[in-house]
Image 1 (cartoon, rainbow, N blue to C red):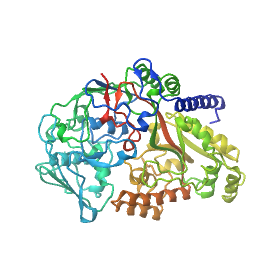
Image 2: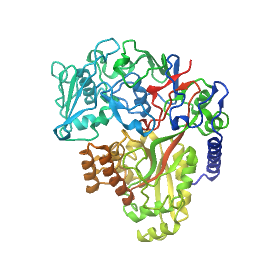
Image 3: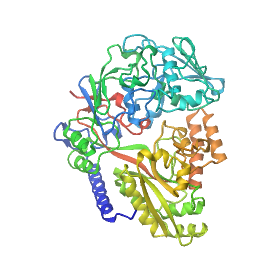
Image 4: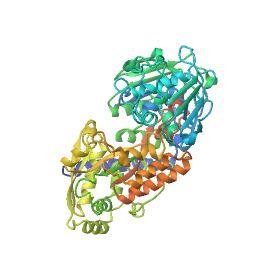
Length: 588
């Protein structure tokens, strides 16, 4: 694919306008929403809590470009679905309802306290709170929690959700799930014990310091066996939280209403402010922005940012309703190290030195709208993150170092340069543009890139298949990644641990299998102190950078709309920068 210079210039010019508007906004402060009154101020939800209030009532209105992957808590993997599930599901522990990095702290929810950890980090014991009930008023029991977790073993019925708990509790895959369970009570998973209705004990075959992070996912939610409808549970999940599902129409939206059996005294997390919560699906992103600006909806559920035209309109007329959210996503390029010439570290380094990081940043909206240039892979919200920059990217403000690029080309035996293919997803509009930007800057040092677009839905069978990458000679892959949970394991392990390499659905595209890095992961998992584990993840991150197997270029930010009706809005690091939806209210 040749560089589309004319269209690229228009897009970069548009990004520059957004940057200018953001700078003016920061200087001038908040603005007004002409339809609904005055907003709380530019970046109010980044600085603290926007429109703090304890008032109840009204309808909280979400709009989104795509449907939920599922409302079934054991099947959810979309990040926005995890955040939304806090309305109708509860877990033993969850993330603190606090702004920023403070949200990464795990706090008790259904349990009276965080786990009592014994047996060298292999046994986790919880006691349940008094007064926790289902939507029919019956008590939530330890057996309900065990049953809910057991459902993720039934991969033929309950598919799609994360497998962490299954891998940690039953690494040999001996349990077959509750639907094939021959025990009388269908609670045959040996790794979880429920000696009574209020006690649950997890016995891990080996320690894992992030086990409580896994329990905080929706997969750790209780399910009442008598209300389990298997694959159809997504249509009407039975509520353990302050709201219940009144209706769900796939592709159209959902309506939640209050659960009258929810006991506020038993729930220290959720204020349950709105009377009703609605979700409307609309696949037209520009139309969504217009509806938000008109005041017809309160929040864009996915929180993936406004379109360029939406950003321009919002920043010019309603900057008081805009937050420049710092996400936990990293945009980066994978090197397929089994594809020549990227089996040579010096050829990989030549790409890093020859790339114009500042131009890549501009394609995604500039430093304000798009995010900060990334010198390494670990997001700022993860313990162990630092400014490690072995290639001097920040020092040279993201500009290419042509001299070093050419020196690396000599060292890799390609003094005249080389040709390579880079894969991009054509349903991610920023990726082809960013690849064309790389194409332009690398061409100046003799590296010729051919941009290969693929449908994002085929990623698992293309970039996720080492054999396909080799067969098609795809040496580079542009992508992005955010943590499943806010630790180094939740972010880095699928991408870089050699034991996670798969023949399809592979995320370790570089096929890195370094014994020292693998051992670092094992060491980190044995560590129950998050700070000490963070020091180990820092070592992993530095090792990744030194090996030049990935080229991160942006710590992502998004321009996010917040309606003037919205109360208690703040950015939560635990939810990749999205608002903590469970805390939101509206002014009636």
